[in-house]
Image (tube, rainbow over all chains, first blue to last red):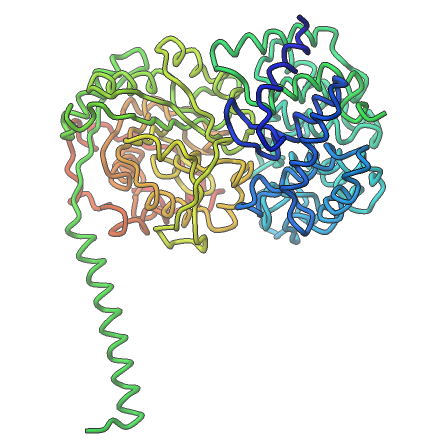
Length: 290
Length: 330
């Protein structure tokens, strides 16, 4: 059985009674897990009924203003909204839900403010992106996800998307790569992280000249050698693939990553789905929709 | 007998003054009367018998087999991120292993290790590259990624920040005994990071973000106190065998202090660590605000077991470019 088939079979065991997907075995549905499972099922051309039920579950979690939060009890944690936009793409039944989610994103940037003269950080805090949680600053991860979602949904030229692009370029580390979203603090350049770098490279593909992110590609190529943790590996592969640098060794790396489950236990649904997508999207996540 | 408006206002003002005085006196009384014990052990390197050293500390601090037997113990190390050649960023895996063995030897039914790093959403990456995964696997100790754990929300018992409630991972309800297993480091925002600041890693990223920016916007120092007060950890162990000085918590230099510091009361443990680092705990804002509310800071209120502070004091470098590190030197 191929890696993808076994991953899909495993994902199917995480379907909940209400059509969503749990994060772990026997867990209740959670929007981030459901959205990622939909992406993996779409990528592998799975049964439409399963996907439609999952999309409906995701819609049932949407709040009236369009956001999709990690749970209805935590509306401020709205970072799964771009994942829902991706999961509803190309679904006529969910066009309205997707439009509301997009509208919410366009109207809800992070907290932004002029840079104080004595600021110990070096990034430009006026540039707007998206936060993980309402009422906080914009960071690389959610801004990258937001930009990917807007691109896929045909809103890539919206002012908010253009500003998100500038914000992400502003947060690129001078030596290459991205971390959670700080570049230098008190004059010291911080370390890049493979997951953040993969997300942002995917978001910036077809938007900025290659020479502006060359160092980040180089960082990621080197960093992925022997890397096994699934979030970093999955996003790392997607980030490179989005720039036409898919790794021939991707299957081997994913297989090694899956072997690590003997040590850590079964991966969560997001990780499993991310690995599926990383294997089936040879030109990056956005290529799934082309 | 009637009151004039002026008399009534005077009476109210006097009552308020009396009330404020009462609160002040009560806090002052608490500052002077609250006593705790901490234990300082020399541990010159990570190959020392750390389980034995920690067991001695537990014994000296009156933690008996009866207290631990049958309990599920959660160890919360400090895993921030990894960088080649910088193992001093994180609690050393052998300290985690030593603590696990010590609690298992006291009859714990299970020891779990859990963490939710604040900078990196791929917890497994830090777990693996810090070497902790390997150590835990050898001892068959489970690890739980707190960043993605379902949460439960409780009222903020501290009231130091504007946050009305805090969302903790359900795991903390499922264990009986919580140990903050911190690293001895200076910190460019907070001055120092020890057993109290380490608790930021308990808060799940799915509700607080990466970094846990909700806590920063609500006030980093106030939130340290809120989380400590609300979570009420049972014990703290600080890895000061090789700590970090200067630009902590990530970019600083390694500093060998050769100690493990432990105790039941987190402010007392952190105050003792601060003194070992050559830092006046009363000058660290969040520690000063913890005094009387969460525990004692005064040296006279902290019974010192094991080594004396003077015998192990190793001044950690403080940098004036960081406002939080100015004026901290003892």
